[in-house]
Image (cartoon, rainbow, N blue to C red):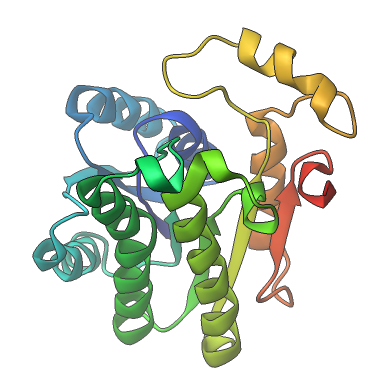
Length: 237
């Protein structure tokens, strides 16, 4: 069976991707940061699809463990066919309000960790597909998401750069969601309230993102692309 390493795979969009890949027949290497109990619950659900699932607790603000994560996954599963960088530090603060610690954590989790894992995937696997979960805000200037937007914009650049450099052996693409999930701890009323601001006047669902994942998995000639699944929100000025 193919194996997927999904970061941030215990909760929210990462969890949806994990369960979808398991349904497609992927063994799952599920990374989590602090959601240990939830990660085990997700892993239990994954195994119900008849595939393997192992969980890996790694603090993405500590670079010493990142290279070891890829080594451990390869040892446990023999190889990795898909890397999904979904873990993120979603911080809603203006630039001038962002502390040094918040800036560092956001850059480390949203950019540095994917960079290192992508490098390890290329050097130690050198085949398959990388999908980076981005954000539609990378095409806009939203001051309320300062450090977050900067980190995701840099990851988008890294997506294209690596796709050009590695395309012969490793395809690299991104998915930029829009109004799909409310912020953590916020009800779905957030989606209904904000839907009128979207060109389609609707909000999306995780199934829209999973369709994008399927497209990238099933389209071997797609490389270096970012799928904006956002109802057209990113095109607004």
